[in-house]
Length: 325
Image (tube, one colour):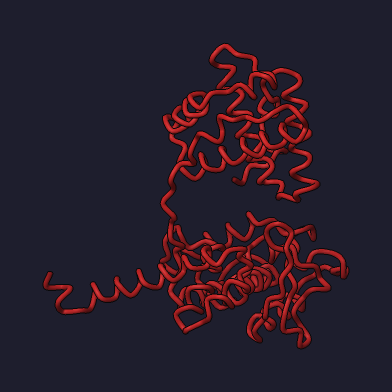
């Protein structure tokens, strides 16, 4: 989830429950950030999930302390999940909430408080895996090209910057956080045909950069009015500070109308398009896994389903017997 702690209502930052639970929760959250190196967004999502669970218990007239958590029954967990579903929370969010509660329970166990046996008796909700929604090749190329921005009133260097960022997403399959995490010294220019990025779980990987992407980054650097120190961010905002992902998202949203694209055409859709288009050109699944930085091949295999779905759509649209049925 994208909400950050700094943007939250101050009252929402207070964890319900007894002092021992709040102290344990703060220690757990600190460990997630420092020891497990989870992203700030993930830590914040886990904090919010725990707060909602504790608030649910408090709403039932309890002020949960650690012994009360250790003594939870499966019906307590199921009641919380059912209440969240009634509030319109989807299966993915419920799965993450349960994962967060289990992580907190492991922390309590490691600290010698005992095991929350109820969590082992509650199954994770089944979630239908949503297929990525890649863009057509022509649309993906257009979004990563500066030509589509002709007539835009923003400064030329800003247009070149956006084109370079999107070129990295489609041309190298980067996540937006990975592209914006690049430093000036990492810029793939002057014959540098690869970049090293920091992905999920602070894992690093080397990703090839094709000449067209190198050219887009070089054009941005030529146009950028700011002196970019080697250890500073490669991509900067209008005032010279680190570029916000939200700015890139807004730039893409403004292009959707011009290109006649649906709302699913987001910066992340360019990464999906990178993988799908490689696979369509007989790219090796293991190689694509490495390029995307997926920990599991099963995650990458989703794109085989995307390709199969596109083939079936083409069959339904073109085959005479399909039309006859």
